[in-house]
Each structure stands twice: as C-alpha cells, then as structure tokens.
Image (tube, rainbow, N blue to C red; front, side, top):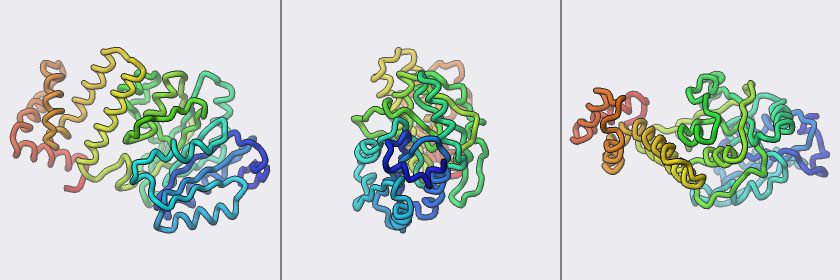
Length: 330
C-alpha cells in the first residue's frame, strides 16, 4: 500500500517512524515530504517533522502537508531555534515521540527516490536479527538538484569498514538519509557532538552489525555551507577536531586497546597537519610532530610543511595551498 493513502495509520502502531529535521528548507522540503509519501509498504508508518523555527516559508509548506495527510504527518513547530541553543533536537524532541520499532532519518534538504526503500530495509532487518542498521548508496546533488556524484558510496575508499574498530578509526560517512535502524539500539548522549551520525553508528556497532543494501535510494544534497560542508579552512578544521573528539570519547566509552587509540591519533596527525599549520595550532603541531617523528612514511613534502609551520610566511603559504586545493574562499 502507499503510505499516503493508508488512513489506518492513525489507528495502528507504526512499524517505522520517519524522523525529519528541517530549518529554512523552502526550496527542498516538498521533495523531502514527497519522498516519504511515495513509500509503498506492507506496514503502517508515521512521519515526525521537526521545524526549527524556520523563517522562509518552510513552516507554511509543512502545515499544508499536515492538513492533507493528518493521519501520518506529525509536525513539531518551534518558535525559537533550538539548534542555535545547542539543544540535541533528536534526543529532546523527536526520539521521545517515535513509536515505531524502526527509525528512518532524512533531513529537509535530502529526499528519497526509491518507493520501496523502507519495505526492502524492514524486510532485511526482520530476517537478520543480528543487524541493527541498514543503509544504501546515494546520489550526491547540489543545491539546484544537479547530479554531482552518482552512486557516491560505491567509490568510497572506506568501503572496507565493517567492525566497530574500523568505524572508530576511519569515521566514514554513511549517508544518514538512507538509514533504517532498530529504535531499541538508540542511546541518549550526555554530550552534544559536532555530528550525531557517527556516535549513533558506533553505539550500534558496539552490540550488533550494520549492512549496506545494493541499491541507491536517495539524493543527498551538498549545500555551500552546512554542518559538514564548508567554504573556509577554520570551519573545516573545527569539524575535523570535532570528529576526533567523538573518536576519543568512544574509545574511552568502549575501552578499546591503546593500539587503536594510537592509530586514531596517528591518522589524525597525518590528515590534519596542514590545517593545524595553517591555523597555527601549536598544541596540535607539537603533538603531531612527536607522533610522526621517525615515521617511515614521512615524505620530503611533509618535512617542508614542518619547516614552513615555524614561520608566519610559511604558514601563509600552507594556508594558500590548502585554499587552492579545496577551492575555498580566502
């Protein structure tokens, strides 16, 4: 059945709760909601939409859908923006209302393209009790809807990641807009992190497995500036350090070995070094130099960066190189 037309949803306990957070997505929210409503399932579904005090007309569009589909769309309208207050929206507002055995995510700028997405994912989890989460591939698009990268995850260098340790070390992106997970595995966080998907993945992997279906079910939109896409080095470096914060906290939470911690820190020292030099982050530069001294993969180019980091003009050169490579604004 098509979930948009099944009015029995208002009487039955939903098997799946779709959770959607949106803010000022007037150009995208219709595609997001329509992507939910095209779903064809053999089970009831509910759609919980959290509008974080939008000011561009997004709220009015959600209200139109609420009137048309009151049996399935359950909005939360904020009058004060909660994200700016550093409130964990999922923990405080959305998850407590979710009644489904399974939870699916999709923010208000992404959208689903496969009408059987939920049906296929639920079927997998119902048959495989040792798996806690299932996801799929995505197509990356820009703010105008133009295709950037088809089947994005199929070209992912971290596709080998399977275990908790793999995900802890490499922190790969796994397109939350495609996820379906067992609600029972959700754990409340005592700390608000720079992203919410990695901590959730790690908690699930600590007690179960995750699986990628061989489908592409959604369009993942890359905006100019968002929680994980930037136009300047400062925000990029802040994001990298935020991911490290998650890795180190979860290494402590699940008591991993010192070898795993060393691998996390060494990998961060490599990938963040140019950013640390550009930002003149003396603490991280000193820590990275201590870790990497005598490392067999230490190249001439890296040694040059070490030298450049010691003088202001050198740091400026490193910064300009990064800006050019990443095509950021100065």
